[in-house]
Length: 280
Image (cartoon, helix red, strand yellow):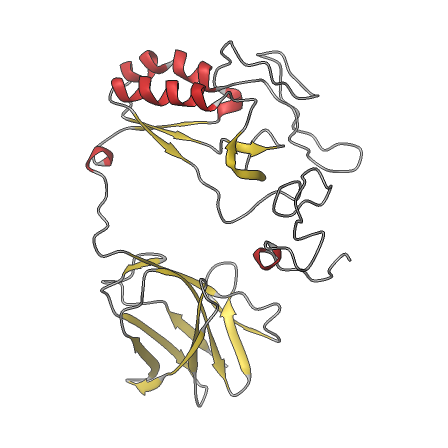
């Protein structure tokens, strides 16, 4: 069987998101006898099935404009399931449990790219390794001296732990703002700053709290206000599609006084995760 997937009308679709006023056009070239597109809304879980029509040598369907939100979709043919592989090519799966779906974001018609972003210069900062300023007392067990080499080899268990810290913080970034201004920087892109336990902070522990090692809310406000006065905007790297296992939401190690997805299937966060073998 030859199955070729033509994502969407390139004039309307540019890599994962469409405007709420746009129609969605999908076409698949295949030797199957029938094909349907199955669309699921992430917000309410509702599923809609759209039979596809055979037009000019391929199956085609045009969906009416969708409401703003996040959607996932895959294809079905007489009980056979087709989703994406790691490179967004189409692939047949044996079950819904293992099937990888295509993702679609629908954004507001009135959305407009901020004017300050156009033609600007963005400077990316990995907070722990940029600059360490004073006034922050929080430390981690494995603290490095500034200038020492980071840990980059696996430990005795073969795991790279990412738990060595240098103490870069908001006050350190603030002290370098005049330098960044001299480079022509108009926006700072901050890697994650929410509470976390790895130095990269992509393993979010609490979306609603700044990592205390970086400083207080007042420290961040001082950084933001100073940057604003110099004509520099700040962009968060918000990693809101995944968490760490040591988090309010998963709570594998019971660090937090919450019912995490690892602790109880009735946890409000249980459906955030996919389990192959539930631990309890």
